Image (tube, rainbow over all chains, first blue to last red; front, side):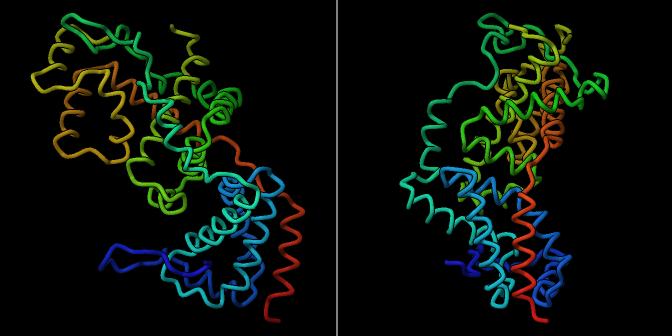
Length: 226
Length: 91
């Protein structure tokens, strides 16, 4: 636990992100600005990931705080064989899992199968496509081009709020993936590492999540088409 | 709207249909399609305004989601962590 044990593809040399060695050195030297920036950069995603394992926001905050203390006591031993971010999130998920188990919660992605199974159909309403005939499977009426809508409508507060609400309504695993990818800007690889997902599971969760948010936006921007 | 000729071209022998394309959009954007599937996907797009617009809607969706406010960690936690950091840091 809490070890610098990022597993690697056999033979693949790990290259740490640019600036990581400097950041680690700054932390070890007690640079407060470096520490504050790191907390601000990673803190929100840490809370979100912790929240998947434990029952309340308050417990998730506890886990995040404990994780930072563990990061401080372990940073002297951090060898840079994984990214600092991966290392911190490994500490976080280990601690969150332990807390969640103590609370009698099941692991979040054990519900992944049921999330996916209860949700296996197409991501776009079947009524939108022609059935039978020469053009089977083609749009009945083509989707409209959103990027031609006025900028202030597309990125207005209300539009963003519609997306936010749609994300909040997603199953846990879909919400986790779309938030880390599209809100926090993580790479697919980072999400797979931290959440322990295969490439295809990550993609399926992301696809379903984005499709539902798209649909909510469509209803808001164009009115209900069905 | 797509013209009838575009739609016919969009459904060549091994072409994808719109109902298939919408389920491949994420794989396409993630670079997860094989070269052959990517070529089929691109061929469909070049003949289908509906799917081109759907892809555009997905890109807009991703951009809008990127603007959703992320909740920050509480200030009290930051303060406590800074105290912990000062205690811990070599002076």
